[in-house]
Amino acid sequence: MILDLVLLWWVWMAFALVLVILEVAIPGFIFLGFAIGAAITGLLVLFSIFTMGAAILLLIFAGLSLAAWLGLRHFFALPGGQVKKFDRDIND
Image (cartoon, rainbow, N blue to C red; front, side, top):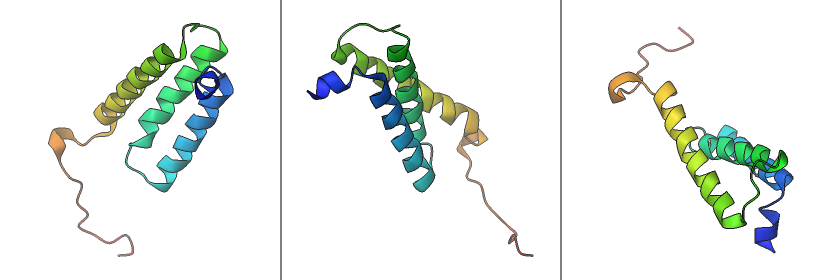
């Protein structure tokens, strides 16, 4: 039953929306990579680009999520693993 839901495009889009809401509530680029992976997987299912079984679809989702997370980490990370420090208060 659950594996049948994995084959529906709107389930992937709803899952992506829930993950984006979680990312807004708990920031840190953790859930955003999974949300991007779920959205792309949903688009693949919607446009019938992917017609294999649920297990392969979940593997594609995992790969896309990992690639999205690594891409977000590459583009938005501070150089050299630095930590951002604030010396002034915004109200000064």
